[in-house]
Length: 180
Picture (cartoon, rainbow, N blue to C red):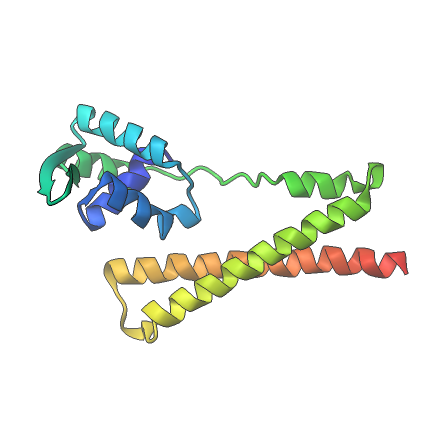
């Protein structure tokens, strides 16, 4: 996936200025696809040049004018093309997993500390996801279309965090018991 496609999805949901888009991106798509604010602005400029988005200058009181981006017909067609394209396998890349595999050749205590830090990060993210689920989807039984898609992606995020928590806990516990 290219950042362009993530931005097309976000802009298809609602037109936005670059700063609004980056804030919204950080609170949604950014949980599973990261990009810096500079990357987003650079790609928006390229997408506008390619005709995938258009911008409208909106005057603001006491602040500089802002550009609001929206998806054009060629942008919608590109998003539709990309959505229909088969998805390649998602490779799992984790520095920590490589370190864990090689822990016998170095400082296992340092690796265990890193695993505990990651465990804490995943517990915090899971807590956030559960908060979002409770706040936004108190009764998911009636969801359909876009709302159902958003809910199911959130559920996938919850399951991934549960996996990481379970697996990191297993690794830490196994080595803690082995050291006794």
